[in-house]
Length: 144
Image (cartoon, rainbow, N blue to C red; front, side):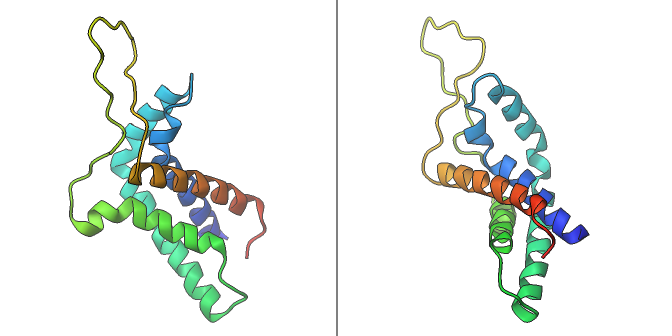
C-alpha cells in the first residue's frame, strides 16, 4: 500500500514538474506555479528515482504474479525516465521553453512573457498532464 502511494504521489509531483512550462501560462496562477516549479526543479531527480523504482517494482510484480500490466507502471516509468534523462545522459540541465522572451522597445510589462513550449518541451508537458491525471486516478482506485 505504501509503494502504491509513493508511485501515485511521484507521478503527481513528477507530472507537475514536467508540465510546469505549460501550466505557468495559466492566468492568475501561472507565475506562482512557475516559481514553485523552479524552486522544486533541483529535487526533481529524487521524484524521478522514486517513480522509477516504484513503477519498476510493480511492473516486475505484475509480470510475474499477474493479473496484468497496468498503465500506472508504464506512466510511472515514463515519468522516472523523463525526470532522470539529463542525469542518465550526463548532460547539464536545460529547460527549453521556460526562458522569458525579450521585451519589445517601449513595453511596460510587470511580469515576463513566457514563450509557448514547442517540440519536445510540449510533448513532455502534455505527458506531465497525463501523469497528473493517472496519479490522481491511482489515488482513487483500490490497491492492485
